[in-house]
Amino acid sequence: MPSVKIRKVESKNDLKAFINFHYSLYKGNKFDVPALFGDEYNTLSKEKNAAFEFCEAEYFMAFDENGVMKGRVAAIINHRANERWNRRNVRFGWIDFVDDKEVSAALLKAVEEYGREKGMAEIVGPLGFTDMDPEGMLTWGFDQLGTMPTIYNYPYYPEHISVLEGYEKDNDYVEFKLTVPKEVPEKYNKIARMIQTRYNLHVRKLTRKDVFQGGYGYKMFELLNATGKDLYGYSELSERQIKQYIDMYFPFVDLDLITVVEDRNAGNKMVGVGITIPSLSVALQKCRRGRLFPFGWWHVLRALKFNRTKGVDLLLMGVLPEYRVKGANALMFADLIPRYQARGFEWGESQVEMESNEHVQSQWQHLDYVMHKRRRCYRKIL
Image 1 (cartoon, rainbow, N blue to C red):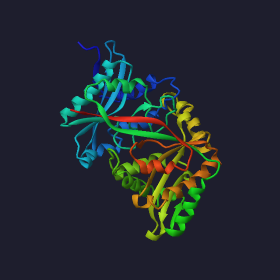
Image 2: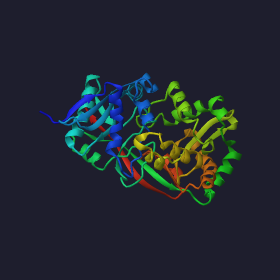
Image 3: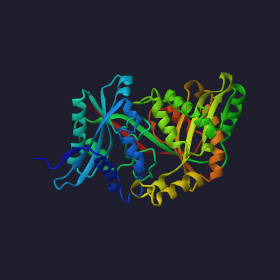
Image 4: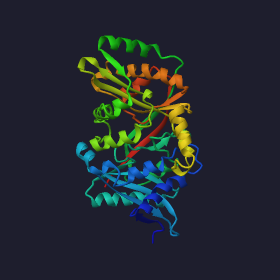
């Protein structure tokens, strides 16, 4: 009789236990950046997350013979992504487990069985509902501080996956740490001046009215849909999802750290966007078990509003393909770097990039940078 028992999340209390497991497992870890409990609850809630328009999911928890929770995992089927990529994939995400191979094997077996019941042919992950969720298991860079949008996991996680039958690499990501220069690299300034004159491309800084009433919130995400549509496993964001993200995050962001590039020859068409935020890594570590109250809100506010942080997260950046060769990326950095300098930021984090995406990685070539993390998505034929 197996010593690991798998149980589905079937109630709100179960879902809270599912979320809280991560905080317990990583308590005191100096590299893990825990998500806010409220954000996790809203993402995993089938009533609240707009992704359930085209996704279905079950959540599983692993317990030992004494009823102590030892692991968790989400099983997700994104029907829109499967249709787009002509696949029958069940995704695994939100996977955490103690260093016990029986536990990790039981959790993934639960996802595999769920996938087979639903007619899926493969299991892939770690992935979330969409690209807005954390993805990829950390395989290198365990001594680096995590970021709000990414996964941190213990080094034994990929070791467990490597001994499970059938699991192989499906995609690898890399992440870069960039030094904020004392001066804007002349290459960026030169390209910025040239493309403003030659192509009539210009930076636009947004106001709250632009975002919430002028349609720019939707335009930014529609552009990200267009630039991300061919990336690994990408699932186009729906109108309801876009509204959800705008309402959730844009009331708090510093719009000065968001840069939009427009083509004035094409009626001020948006052709590029860079959404960056002060790093919340240290602030989130100070939110006890992912809660803003009683004192966590102050640390987050200090980072967001008063820039009490040394890093900046390059959260979402995209340029339409036909404008990349024109240097629109350089125009964005020529605008953003002086703003980073004024706030005292010392470094930036690039977030996940496919290791094969040379176009994205080439934009860092004029900066001091180091590749400091790698992560992997796995795949198994069912």
